[in-house]
Image (spheres, rainbow, N blue to C red):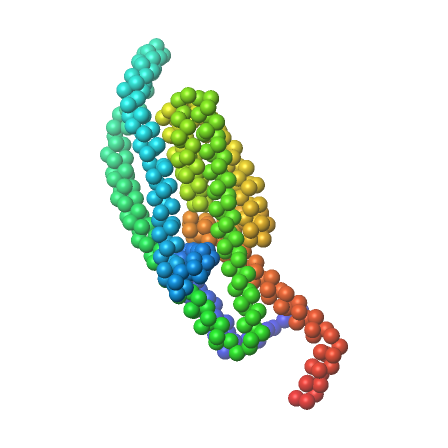
Length: 378
């Protein structure tokens, strides 16, 4: 049996206009993704820093929020300067030590090359080696051009990152100053006071999610920094070549870079491993093995459990949100993906509870009677 469905022209046109509108909205969002990422990052930073700023403003004369925000920024800059003061001198010291040992390294490499040369002559591999060297020479120009292009692109990316960082700092500063004023203006527009209270509660819960995420991320970074410093300090006891003062820069590097999701911890682990190799190859190998094992534990147990506890998400939801954020919006998307997932959870729970309450009220006999009477009157 055939079924014929008649659709009038107005419905057909309206359907396609809606579809085109969604497509244009998606295209606009994709085109403005960089600006949206900057605004979103500034918004989440402002929410995270609002607690210390609000607390500090209560202690200042006149309860100046501008002064509290400025002092908070100065405190962050002072902490960063302190971290640099602890990290840079040991790195410079170890780099200088490595430069002093370069002649010995070159001599050892030359000795090993002579042994390789004897191996080549013994097994008559000189022709293959010459062919490989000619290939390297032929491709040298293209390699050099690629390196130069990559260097130029790297400079452009660096300046783009600096510009974006400045915009984030400025926007965060303005949001911290003007945020309470805009919040009051928004809620003053409500006519229904009960709805205003419910929405205030919803906003406060979402605010708690963001601050909880920031606290959790700082906790994870602190745990990693403590263990990294502890392993370096223990190695300094048993390996004389490892200076004990490397424990402090190890903790600072691990803590700061671990705040960057996905690849930040890897960069920090690589830097520390190189610093240790400058002093002792076995120490560098030991730390590399420790770092790989610890990262597996942190990524699969410590970080998901702490973040899940702070923002009330399952470990699967945390890992899934980070993966989606990284692949959709890049590194910054990975940073803000978890609090966004937490806020979405709050919204879903709110509307589910609201829908269930409406169903329960409509199922009551008195409510049904009132609804029936209203229908008869109409």
